[in-house]
Image (cartoon, rainbow, N blue to C red; front, side, top):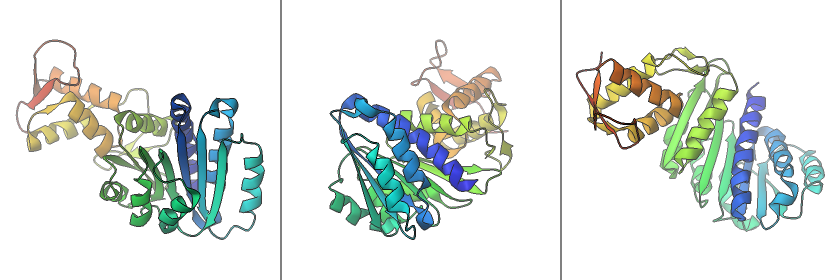
Length: 286
């Protein structure tokens, strides 16, 4: 279940990322570090890229695969590459994720917009993550065992925004680093679309649904206001998306609940609950 789920989430992220690349007509790099020679994520990336066909004209896309222990992987990736337009180049290099800096230089792929996928015991490798963060811009999706400190690793590597979501029934944790609020919020929506239960802010299973009980997140946001003082709607929404399993839309519902129950006040007092509205705790967290 683990690898298949990682492949599914990564495939959706590749789709969103390549869509942006096509609109900008730029060069870009997709990095896939395959654990134990599992080429599934790399094959999924090439399959998704192939959906764009002629729309890749004007772009230059490098797919860099790091893998060990899969004798048939060159043949499998070669067959997939043969179906792709000439704008796409695939490089397969042996070695663990820590070889990513060398691999990027060898492929001439450094400095481009970069989407990286790292899975398994080396998903939080600091050398690999620091190299992944050199993309302009950079995004990294990590898939590791439950309890792995992915968010801290992404922050240490230089990603301005990061989150980590524990999957309640899969024994896995997914991490994501980016510099874009929009990408971060999209990733959360993609995770919720899988239908898998996540771990809520108090360790409880959180089942994805179009609308969830806003109270647990409301309590988390109120505690944040009590600890650190007034925050804007934008800051609280970002906190919810980075520090919990919830989405941006859930954060807005939780803030509305806090206002409706007079646990917070707002300035200005009237108008839309926009990003620059300032919320202040009315008293200690319950």
